[in-house]
Image 1 (cartoon, one colour):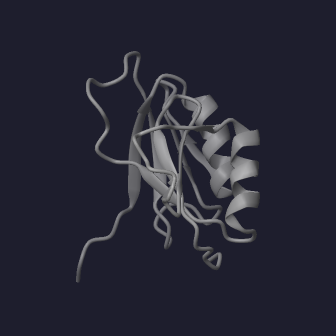
Image 2 (spheres, one colour):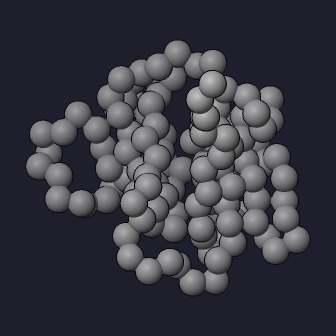
Image 3 (cartoon, helix red, strand yellow):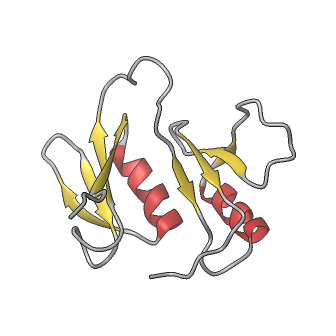
Length: 126
């Protein structure tokens, strides 16, 4: 048997802000809150299902250097243009990482500047 991803951990200054953003983006809910303000969000079914949860780990200062991990998202019920519009309304903003403009994806940043990509292909919801 192999491992699978159970949760992704994202260091952030304001877990509440990122929880609201990512819950709207992914249709997740808050699963747990820690005494230090850290939060875990995930699918309504909770931890251990087919999708990993996201643990928003409260940090006063951002970690040094560029993060080596980013999230890619796919729309499940609309095309890429409609999803891009929705994400921008939620507080995402375009991020320039040197793309050419010919890519089939959009590079965005969440409210704390964490980069993520909106891919073109639509996937069926679980």
